[in-house]
Image (tube, rainbow over all chains, first blue to last red; front, side):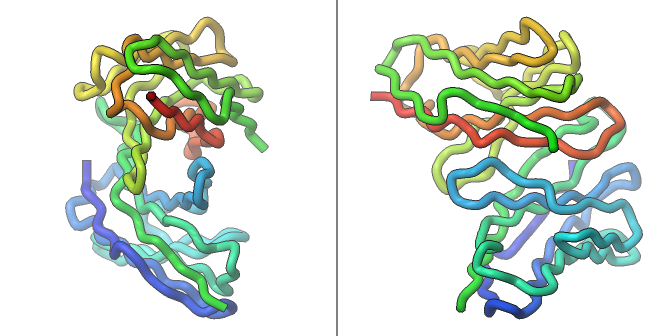
Length: 113
Length: 113
């Protein structure tokens, strides 16, 4: 499985865009990039996922580089409720590890007033 | 929305006393997962079921076992809890092999005295 690397923490001002980077330089062709977040003392919550195209939903946008070795999660207008640990996960869709999530260390996003 | 329910939210047990954690899901999902999350760490996959097929991670201690008596319910049994087993235990479910999203429950916080 590809390993993901994320900065341990980031700060963002309320109302501004939060851009969370993730490095997955060893990703293989059949692996998707997923983003989850975990608010303190809660279970992880799905945000978005993608293979190679940029994706957008009501929560966030996912930008994946052309070589797929890195991605960025964008929260367009961060609020205090977005304070959480954000996990970038590379997930195999084939092979003996298919569909398993192996979490990296995550980024603690602190949204400040 | 998918509902993954974990009971209890907080569980206290004594060193060496067997304990069972419970998880249920309401959407007839085929796949269920158990993760262990220690303080300030990322969730770590313990095992998963695809229908009745049990899949153990190679580094999951023998002290941890699981049962899935039917589609809706999945149990985590810790035969002889040690102090190092104190953690948040997360359950997740997923509709099937080719679907994308794992839905997580709120977790059970286990304390070992």
